Image (cartoon, rainbow, N blue to C red; front, side, top):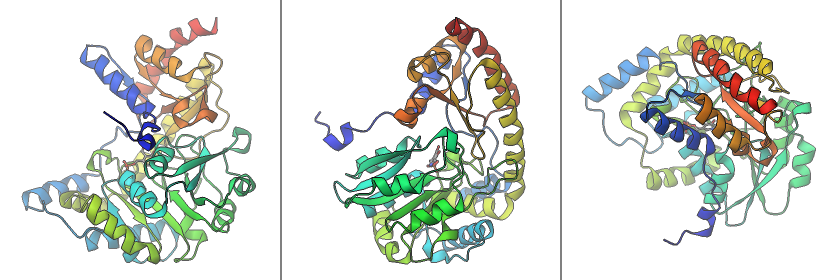
Length: 386
Ligand SMILES: Cc1ncc(COP(=O)(O)O)c(C=O)c1O
């Protein structure tokens, strides 16, 4: 089979590869603790489950308006408005089968072949791959632990070229947990290229931190796109529900793409989304408090094992740990931990060359699992330190 060149350049999603290998080991009878994927162990809000069940039984199993049910778009606009303090017209919301398809819509709408997209490194693995898939070229701008993984707008300015079409970033970010300050977002918007701000971890923040939304620093018609979804805050990964908030000038193009590529998000899942927004606030707050406790447990435990954690993550549910005391090759180290300790960790290489030598651990797991993982890793790591 002949693979198109732009597809051949897409790297495997290493965290998923570790998960799939771990599941194969489990099928063979081995116990595996999954700290590699960003998959909350908590349950979705009960109201969302009930609304989904009811919607299925009532036959809400059809296509909907490609942009989403009006009631859901209204609820999303109200929710985002409550979190950001910015008035938001529901017409600007496009509902999708997860944040990932929304990213695909945006890059499809924005990129000509050869256009460049600035991607801060370390980065969510899929960003550069979506860019490549749409014929674009990722341009990486490093962020440094010493600066809390905050993006330097001057470094972004230096990376701009006549082909630069967009900047894509996450805040709070996967894998660093960093929150981009308001001034940084303001400077990025002023650069005159489209800003795509992935806010899927908004709300999962600790120690009193607050995540500034890109909506707060831009006019409604600026080329600013915000992505968000239900996977993380509401522990609804498998429902596949997310959305983009776009400027009015882009809406028709995104609607046409959505009609053609995905038609619409699942109707019964959209009803679960409405219920989550209406009645899920307590579940989100309980999740945030649980993650906060787990974050402390895992930070202390990993440091005690000899990992160096240069930045305490302010949000999301990951710890990016420097593992160079044990090995330079993050894929080899993750493989060893999986095979020998039965502990899944995402190799730093997944997040770009800048994170090679690091491992990313997810603390979206019960405290007992985190404790057991730390216990299991100790002897395997001790061998490597000698
Ligand atoms: C930063 C970031 N964006 C997007 C996604 C994908 O989210 P969804 O489940 O909504 O497709 C993830 C999942 O891990 C993520 O970490």
